Length: 362
Image 1 (tube, rainbow, N blue to C red):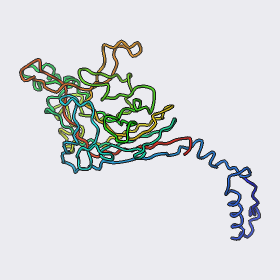
Image 2: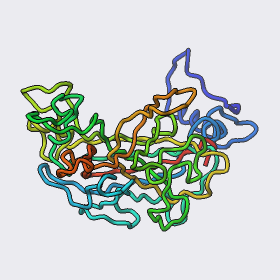
Image 3: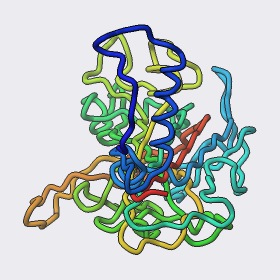
Image 4: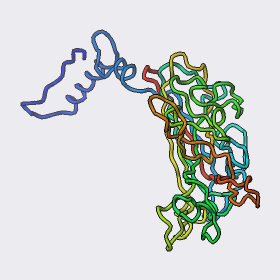
């Protein structure tokens, strides 16, 4: 602080005049109006802006604007297919405010960052992505009683004659995954140019789970300790009760556009939230052009019992992308019996945002 001469009122506490107060104020303003060798404040720009405080460099946000009234089935473009029966490992969430699929920038969840020129990435920046997804409905290809698990209803195990529920479809731990992908290739924001954060050249370290690139059917399995899963949010498919009871079903729809009826549906549509925070690596990709959300499913819990990892041992927990449909009868052909699941996940409102910050000043 520079030298400032002020009229001191305390401790005499005499008559305080407006002129005296104004004189002190003028002296302070004059002394602190510039930053120079005689006036260096601990709250000056050197400390506040260039050291500890984050500076916002870029903000981008959008919503698809699709909003439905309860008991309304969402459009076909807002229903995203499973891998089983449709061979879709992942799909961009791209329905607009009318429920129509679009590849246009600014529609669906295709968020442009930095305008047409893109955003110039530098080392040590923090990228925070947040998204909200409304789970609107579940549309399986078969009736729910065919999906009951032998673990919660022993009569399904063998499907023998006289069984009350003659079918079974495994452990039933099914879910969908929703996650952001990044485009550091082109401001055209083509769907094929979106990749996970590491492949995009934004961060280094452990590989991210990327269903479109390295997971799939035919027993495709990814252990939880093999790749990063923390960029995904889990959208549950069904709620399973612990036992088969006479007062209610063993399986209930987790979220339904029809709302709860206390018998087959657990609740109304559910809003899910995800956050991913990244710190850019040394020499990151030159530009970030955009971010888009993707959905993949049905995923199923499993364990790799044949593993030989010396640390995790032979039983590695993880998930695989279900590649079988549910066809417990096989149409009379035992070789065609399948105990998987296929169908669609119905989504409604989606919001996506990106904030890029730096601790190195503007």
